[in-house]
Length: 157
Image (cartoon, rainbow, N blue to C red; front, side, top):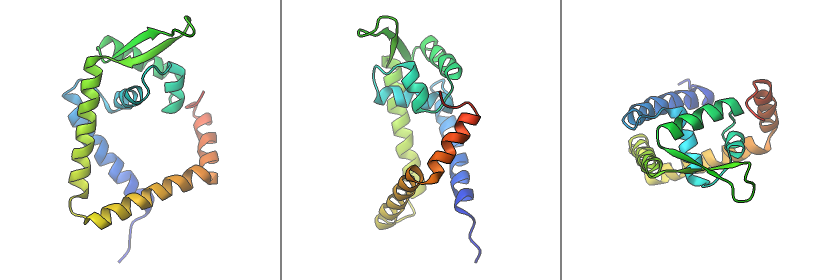
């Protein structure tokens, strides 16, 4: 029996996850692109737009437009930094916090749907292997290759 490549499997899962998320996010008035901003800001309250941009590998123009949309739609608020009055920090509003709770909820739904046919041992093995692959990617030449690729695409500052 011929197996498909790891890359193909990851891409297929990401495509399905994106479709699943977009259906859920439409109910909240969000897109999957904006979801990543909400998740990061929710985990890093009072982060700066520059920090956010670097963390999620987006150029500053895209980050600014996305933040402006999230502010306009009531998910995020900008606050003047107490340390440097020239800069702003980002925080979720109550609406943004509610959206984050929904996002966590449908992440759990996705996990249940996808992993329900695996035993607990298989689930633990799968997660351990994926964590190992992440560590390998971060420490291998792949990480430096990807950073060069991102810079060529102007995805990093």
